[in-house]
Length: 229
Length: 229
Image 1 (cartoon, each protein chain N blue to C red):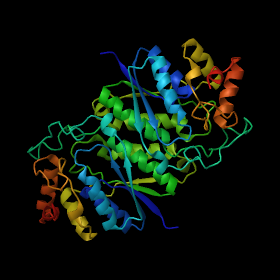
Image 2: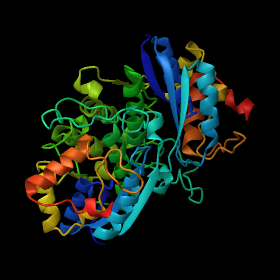
Image 3: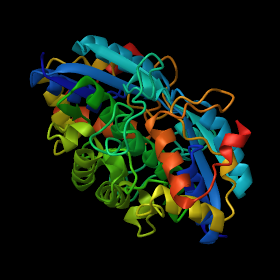
Image 4: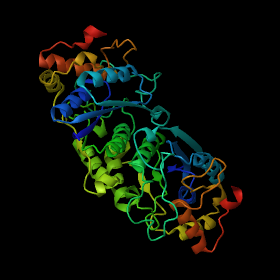
């Protein structure tokens, strides 16, 4: 049996590159996407496009009404999103787009599927350099999840634990753009905007749009997704 | 504002007593129940009964197709359940009713809601003495989840972290029966059987039925739920 990895695929560029890293490392890829009440639900469609584009063996969509228990401007289409913030502001403090315990919920579900599949690894696109102030994107957080995973599962108890891998953790957005090019990831499928329309049209003003634009600018590339939407 | 706790309520007796412990400790109770594809789905109805009986301020039901990604004899109605095992066997090794990462998924969702509510604690009915060999019911597992929770959330980062409380951790099933009596928990609402019918009729042969019967026998009580079903 080929070695397997579960990848959390959001439809954004970081998780797409993370998926490509898993393929490049020789894993058979099992992509997991959550429709959890995010306002930019077009990202779920884009996750399907990315899964197909990178060559996932399987792509599973789960429905979970996280919005019912986790209040955030990212799950409440009536709430105001931070817009037009200076880059010095983005990443200082925890923004209203933080969704309580989101990565913990997603990693837990990935862990359940990984154990069922006999997967050796879970890939997540978390990165800290250009991160938006989310506590559950930090290396120390992922280390704590690793410790938990080793104790939580039958596989862990039996010494066949799942490894949590965050290949982009130390990369800037510009480096992620460059890595995508090296791995031939078609970033035109990806969407980052927190309030993207169903057409994929982006706002250009939210933190996610600004971080993405800054990444492409610093890498000296144009964003291929702007042609698609 | 009264202090708040989220309690994971399954419809079984341990989580009912755990809920009553939270009330006894002065918490306003927010009960969370998952319909996750368990074969004994009557427990979800019983969780509603228990929430009402113990006086929860709110009871939230979430739907999650965990069965689609987590294979177990507890989520596959075609699979054989362990039945009629000697008590020396129950609790030795991890049985087929283990659901991959179930408590991790449930605690993650409880964590999301707790942060949204500003809750101080999460109560879970895990107990190790009479446990059925599940890795995610052990004290070291819950300690690892506590460490994770402190890093995962905005509340944790800001020093208002949620405390994970497992008040039954060291109790035997007989002691849990006695504690239920002290706290005036009506155990007739609870159901433990892994293959309970929608009527609440229990099999009497699965591990959960045997552990429950042993608990009542050792406590010198009869099980009031047997009258209800």
